[in-house]
Length: 181
Image (tube, rainbow, N blue to C red; front, side, top):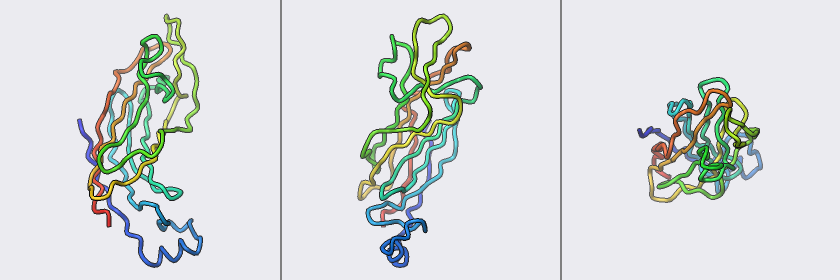
């Protein structure tokens, strides 16, 4: 299932350029080197996790923000630090990547608090995040001459006592970026 999101590029007007040059970055005007492309995606649910994807300009860069929240209490998203093959083959790491009109300029990060999950009956500790919302942040740059991008999300959620939810692999979100004026 592809989720389609429409983005509108904000144009930096002469007034904003003057304000940015004057150092008033808190006005919301796009500064030098900052893309003004922003979006708020319609939320979707896959694998028992509610997801929203959006872009946000910040500190002279553009970032993709993916907000993920397990719908069931006691379920935790696997960590970005989980190895690709899991731990002893258990778990699916959380991943985000961009293709097309947006390209990553650094690794994905989150400020979610990590913890170790020890599923009942298994002798393994899995890196997950605490209950609640997990926001992934991927720094990106806009590719000139393109009007869309694809974001791919991979994640899974597990509980210490109630098992795991179906994993989601490479869930595609299409972002329509609009003109790059």
